[in-house]
Amino acid sequence: MKNGLVQERGIAVGLDIGTTKVCSIIAQSDSNGGDMKLLGAGVAPSRGVKKGTVVDIDATIQAIEEAVQKAETMADVKVTDAQVGISGEHIRGLNTQGAIAISKNGHPVTYEDEIRRSDIERVLEMARAVSFPVDREILHILPQEFLVDNQGGIKNPLGMVGRRLEARVHLVTGATSAAKNITKCVEEAGLMVKGFTYQPLASGEAVLEPHEKELGVVLVDIGGGTTDICVYFEGEIRHSAVVAIGGDSISNDIAMMTQVSLEDSEEIKTRYGSAKAAMASTDLDFELPHQADETPRKASEHEVSRYVEARMTEIFQMVRREIDRADIDAPVSLGAVLTGGGALLKNCASLGEEILDAQVKIGIPKGLSGVVDVAASPIYATAIGLVQQPSSKKHEFKFAGTNGAGVGKLVKNIGEWFRDFF
Image 1 (cartoon, rainbow, N blue to C red):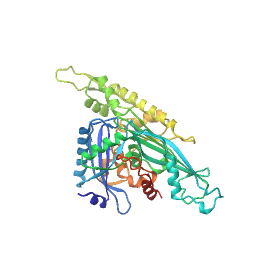
Image 2: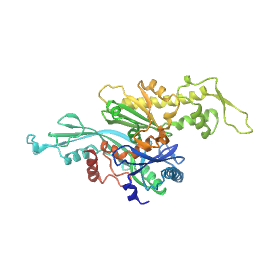
Image 3: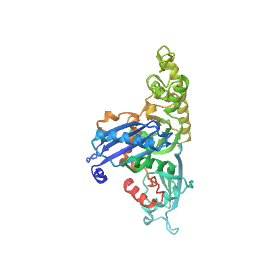
Image 4: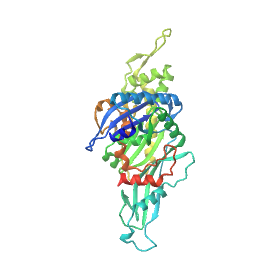
């Protein structure tokens, strides 16, 4: 199938390349403006990625091919490009701002001095004019608010009148080499990269409600190698961070303490582990996997859950630290939404409520019609959010530098952003 035909049919592909798994989602937009229709979903084990970074090209290519092929078979369609999620320890988020003068030649403000698109382009250029190392590039510019003559809280300053225009934005940057290595893997698997999206932004699009973002919410995406955090307030991103601990750390702890393989420890974690050891049985024992010539050993649910709780407590403590770093003036009690594979651990939300001192719920992807039961799980949140990108573009300005092109196409992409945003 040619790429043009894929676009004409409104088919979108989301590809979530994680440490534990690769998820692929194929969906088709509704011509009537309704929810996108889920056509296919595929998951494959990921063994070539560590903490969000490619460490084995061949293994990553194989996982992408397997996940995409499963989704294609289910959808009965051949796809050629995908929106790809990106995360990892190399991701950095920071708040910055820029300001420009609007009034002409020092004259008093008149209606001729209204804010134009060119003014917003200039102030965004000022906001992103931060000195970065040569091996880093901007993935997203996420506007938080505009200020006109110190009047804040403005979402769209176009056409307003003032002397001074300021923009406060959140920048997400990543390592150029990391994006290039993922691009190589995707292309070797037979797909073109339409663009990259920071994974928790995609997850947030799939699981968060608009009113949650407005009132204040923390998205916690617990993956295999990392935990991604996004703090929303007044509808915009106020802080983002990546914590280099995820579900794999729990599996490693169980493997070390019980002397079983990583594969077995993953199954033990899923079947018997609880994020709150007090809610696990001390009497329910199970037999640990062993070789034929080894003496059988047993462990209890409570014992395994103590390892789980220790790591999950560490993760939530780090999440709380990042919440405290968020640039939020108003004292608010933020709720939290958990997603990613780690959110499936028993009593995960309950432990989160204790440590974060907030209401916590599990985020289930929404916004798709069709066979949604297939992907009604937090593990699909990022991939589903990636296919919903057209509806989320209005919330951000994105540079097309993620395919190694750098940020030289600034003016062109600001124009594209305007068409989506306004």
